[in-house]
Image 1 (cartoon, rainbow, N blue to C red):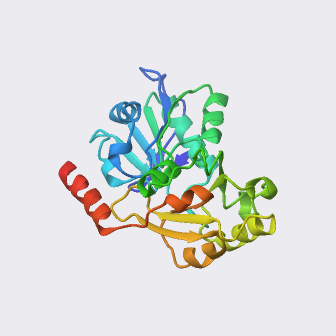
Image 2 (cartoon, rainbow, N blue to C red):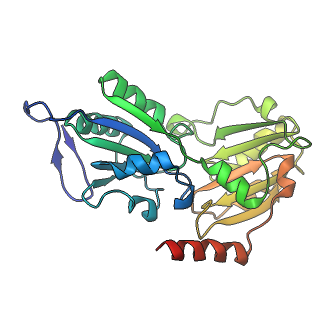
Image 3 (cartoon, rainbow, N blue to C red):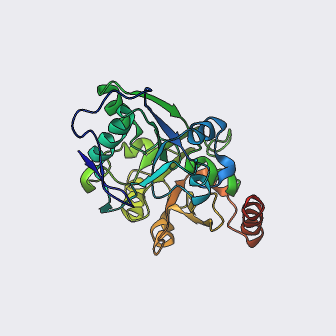
Length: 277
């Protein structure tokens, strides 16, 4: 089996190699939304012991730099309609490296189990008899709401929060309970929903959600170039138009507390990152 790399082609599992001197394993590690300060201690320990780091495109360079200098880094970046590797290829790559006795870190933006396909990779490792451990990460919704000062739950404005995806498999519309999501005092966080903001907003309003419901869009959450747009459900599509970076859409009464981006906040993030450099 072959696995592509940003540097060269590598043969994995060719022939009948001798048994590895040590047992390999896979760590599914959440890198968080981008700010290295939000990386967990468990994630840092796993990354520091890695022989191979198989990472998403959204993982920041600052976090990748925390891996050992000799560790091999393989980007399996995914973008809409543009995948460098199919998911099955990634699964086989993780298993093959671990079976060769390597310590493999599958480094994923946010949390591995929040729209990160970590469950599929865990299943593949289990099916192959490869040990697979998980280091959870700060998912983007938590970082986005915290930075904006808008809680996802609030005793007076949000008694529930639901994370949904704006895209289902093979481009299909997500199969969601729109009537449930349209209830008042319920925060709805939409991942990967920028290009489908119009249809999603329409579905929520058709199901009864008030167009005046506060909404927040956060682009590049926790990074130096983070940007926020405070809007309403009725204006969600127009507010999201033209955004290019990864962004979250958050709809709910508690978003009335959200603060738009200010230069002071961006300056604070830049200063902190410069201090780490």
